[in-house]
Length: 299
Image 1 (tube, rainbow, N blue to C red):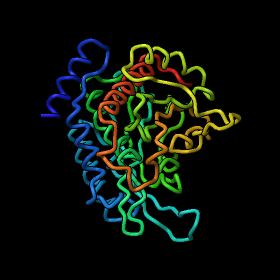
Image 2 (cartoon, one colour):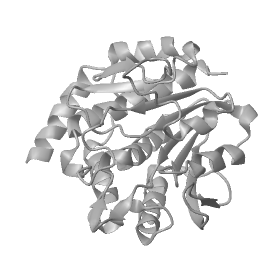
Image 3 (cartoon, rainbow, N blue to C red):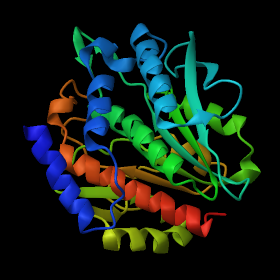
């Protein structure tokens, strides 16, 4: 009954706003599955990671996201900074083909998390099952409403502790064709209805398009967390996979929340997410992608 009531409320919101129509039940179900105990915290190069990858591949196909190359899976090897052991990672890369441009907007979200520590499972619902589940909803939307530029949809591995997945992705793409990167990492929990878009300090040309989105969004879309000289405010510029693009001069916007209470803690569970906010955040990100696609801005 509660889920049905939530769906009715969401449909009412969509009827009086510009919010894209998505399936909220499926979106929340995807987060719940990816952050369940049987995924064992999705630690890179682990059985839990492989199980999550199987689910992601299935949902890519169901959303209509096509293979970017001969396979969705792009394996790579890497080392954690604190050891000399070679680990295996796997990025999952798909595409929603563009109608009239060979250029591409690269959408990223990492699916790995911290695994099991001292007998506790770190499920990583917000970090970053929330971002990965959003990929399916966004991919489904743009499959039904094809973009001008190709939308590269990527679930990245090995973000935690190394950032190797983002680096491997950038190496595999034609950088001359990349319009920009939109990175989703922790978008599922904020009691104050605030979603941050970081990156406009470095790429101010992107801000006017996000201001349009903010004016019609059902969340409070704020700018910040991208200035290195501000005291007592975290700079997120190097904190996730968007940094692999930024360090090569490719524009980015990083969508995230200030989830300090549960970040990298065993309490980052599906039950502790702000479900209604999360659905609105995903709708807002779709609006932003539509603006970026229409304008072909960012380079």
